[in-house]
Image (cartoon, rainbow, N blue to C red; front, side):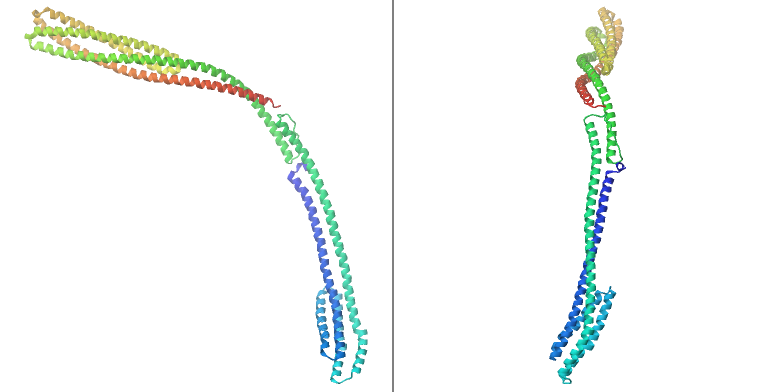
Length: 546
């Protein structure tokens, strides 16, 4: 039953019992001391009463002494004890009357004493004083007064004074008896209080010892069980059987230890399984990280090669752009020359008189045009070769982008655009070549016509018209060549910008690949650290006995 009470309730019950015993002791002691105090007060009251009775007797003696002194001397000064005795008797009697107000017997004695004293004063004392005054006044002799006083005092001694002494003696004896009874009651109360304190103190001490011993034994035994359980858990023994009895704090502590041990057992089991899984995962991560590191190094190497290839492609595109600019200048010159040829033909038509010189000049101009056409043919061949090289570079870039996988996908798109531009450039140069061939054929015909001579002036006029038309066609062809060359230049500029973007992208890809390589190497080292930690955790968990 006690094991179901909390420690606070057990201690409260034990100390409550001790406090109850102490309270009883205090009450009994207080009651005893109150009795003693009351007895002391009553003793003081009794002493005051006895002292008052003695004072009454003294007052009566003083009255009698004063009366005798006055009777012998006849002087009023000797009446002072008489007057003082009367006053003292009245005061003392009144005081005793108040002190014995709770005692009817003593009140009766005091009333009887008062009546006797009044009668004694009036019949004996005051009468003797009157006799002495009569002697002083000469109304009586001294001998008669003395004889009367002696006679009356003997009778008063038998009647009144003895009676008052007896009343006072009885009064004092009763108070003395009360004093003895009260002293006995005081001693009895004192003894009861002392023995009650001694017995109660011994009982309280025994109760405290028994309660302290029983509580300490119970608490110590069960606390030792809790300490052994805690030490076992601290040592890694999680298979200890914990017996939790009682509903007090120690029982709750043992139940909490049991729940904690069960939870720790589950946690350690989970940690052990997790450590094994972590160790396996760390090994897999370490192996994967090594493979990724190798792949990242290969990727970084491929990205570096791709960057070099794109750089070469950019240089080639710059060269093609420069050649296209030169072709644009030549085409512009050809256009201007064709305009001039048209003007010459118009002049020939306007001035037939100068046809020979004009024809000759036209022949020279046509020859010059033939040479320019040859130059244009050379330039067109160069552009065609550049377009073929660009196409080959685009194919190589596409192959490298395909090798790069997802990271080279953007570069593959750019390579396809470059290849398309190269194909368009080749097609345009082919058209220019065809046009140049036509121009060369026309110029050759013109040269042949000029060789016919002046004899064929009429035919020359017609040929001039034909030449004018041919010049117009040449001018149109030159314009088309300029347009095509402008398109080629623009496309090459776009290709150059795109190739530079591709170069920067490839450079970033290379940097990212190198960064990835470092990150993967760091991840590999971290995976190795995790593997070591998992092994250490597995060793630590293995110390627990489940």
